[in-house]
Length: 249
Image 1 (spheres, rainbow, N blue to C red):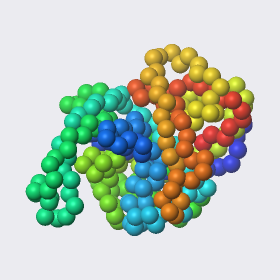
Image 2: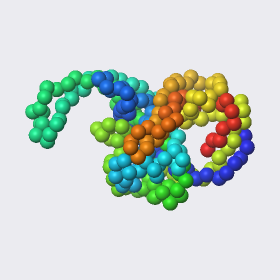
Image 3: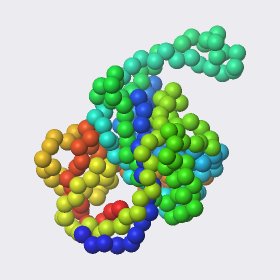
Image 4: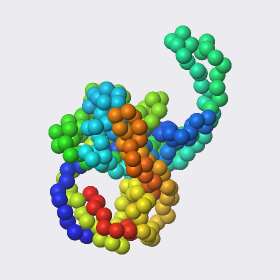
């Protein structure tokens, strides 16, 4: 493993009691990803900075902003039937509109929902150091809370309110990983880059997850930004070998 350039990254934990990261292709049954998609994390960060909806895509493009996501706690999916209202005007918020619809919905919850909570580790690298410093000022405060210039933090759906903790601005090095060299990581890795899954000394529960990393100005998913990731969902890190030389943070 060879040392490369110095990098500055923002680290924090995104936490909450439950989550629903809706799969874009699900309709009658609301399916959920285990991981928050990269576009969801970018939206949360833009919301904290006070960006209006659909105005932040250029500042958080893949060229400028790279994000890594890992799972800190054991998580699982459950399915609940939701009793939904079809609301076409304010007058129907009381339930006076069309008949209610029963909709199966997947939720991500901790292994023990009574005592536990969801926790995702997030790493953010951004080419604009001033923007990264603004985020760090909001997230890395020593106060008991953090300040938002926009929306509250939610884990997907608005009713899944969450919080951010353990914010740190870290100095590190970008490393070049040699072919077939093993490395241990708690973060999701693109499946296309993985040559081999190695023994790690403990039982990992691995999942293949799809993610989207970028929208264009018209809110379309850009070319080559849909990725299949391999991630451990029971908090143990993965031991992997990659197919070719890779730069890792």
